[in-house]
Amino acid sequence: MAILSSMLLLFGLSIESVDTFVTDYMEQHHIPGLSACIVFDSEMIWSGSWGFQHIENAVQASESTVFMMASVSKTFTGAALMQLWEDGLFQLDHPVNDYLPFVVEHVSYPETPITFQMILTHSSGIKDNWDVMSSVYHPGDSPIPLLDFLYSYYTPGEPFYDAEKNFTTWEPGTQTRYSNMAYALMGLLVQEISGMPFDQYCNGNIFQPLGMDETAWFFADLDSTHIAMPYHWQEDHYVPYGYFGYADYPAGQLRTSTDQLCLWLSVFLNDGTCNGFSLLDSATVDLITTLQDPSLSSAMGLTWFKRDVNGRVYWEHGGADQGVRTRILFCPDGNYGIVVLTNGEANLGPVVDILFDYAENWIDLQGSIAGIYADDHLTITPNPVHGSSLIILELAAPGETLIELYDLSGRKTIGLVSAFLGPGLHSFELDMQEYPSGIFFIRSTRNGEHIHSSFISI
Image (tube, rainbow, N blue to C red; front, side, top):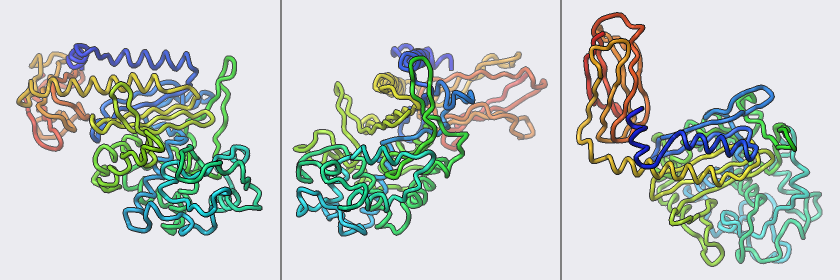
């Protein structure tokens, strides 16, 4: 796309500069592998991958590499719960004890019920006891069932119960404190209310309908050769942690890839719908992305966090675990989102920032050139073709664009382009050196509708 690239540079944009920044940052901060993408509306407009998903096996990272999500997993757990809320199976101000097979009481405020709203907004007073949580990390998947683990964590006298370490000193609903164990409890609530194991509920109601066919809560349900190995940088080399899991898995154990998270972001950019499937009502998406109680938190929606940086407003969630750092975020006003996944332990803020700039400049470019091209047009130059030519495609509107080459019998010989393209000028090389002399036919479509056709001769 030589002509398009030149136009992008007019807006201070360079794909090469993004690539250089990311590779330099990875080297400086010891990130073994990184995969990222930018989503606009419901389409991935850019993606890139660098480094290795598995260093020892020399497997390079790609858009389909399956990374552990860490706390980005919570966005799926929260959505699963909100689906059941849409079904009228509970209200957000209901006590969770009405739906659990055991009692969860704050040790200092047993008369204050813990509600769904409190769990969704990290104001439940449930605290992460890392002495317990660290002890249940396990190679592969944890052998401890979710119900058994949480019963032991919340029930006095059980091995994982500690009144001081498992609960805050303040009353539920009066302050906020980020809580993995509260979100693990949310996974159990989904399990109890739906009547099916939490992971199976997500498979049937989120992953499969969206086409996220290589996304799973358990390591055993994935092809291990596709999964990024988590690493720690030690002095002068990378040390693999090995693949691991834990008993409180709904809080952070999901594994998926950049190209599949593109579908997930599309849900929140398109009023709860993706690929023709309505995952959430538009009103529910609005509720999720509404500040719940500004007196407690200036950032807390339902699961997602609101950020305002230099006038740039977006909703995000990050994740951090052993050998894992992830970020997923979207800007409703700009209708775009960003995914960054790694198998290292560095801060991803600078990478997110440069991708934000790239996304906003791309969108500005589309707006600036949208009125230049009133019609769609395709040109091949030179024509007749002597070895190779240039296809110049002018688009008046964005869409999923195909350019295909046919012989005169109507048989398609090659698909030249298949991509989501914005309005404006695009160029592609047409290499015909291996084709016999004769007349051929090029046809272009956008979103399945005919744009332009041309004959070429060799």
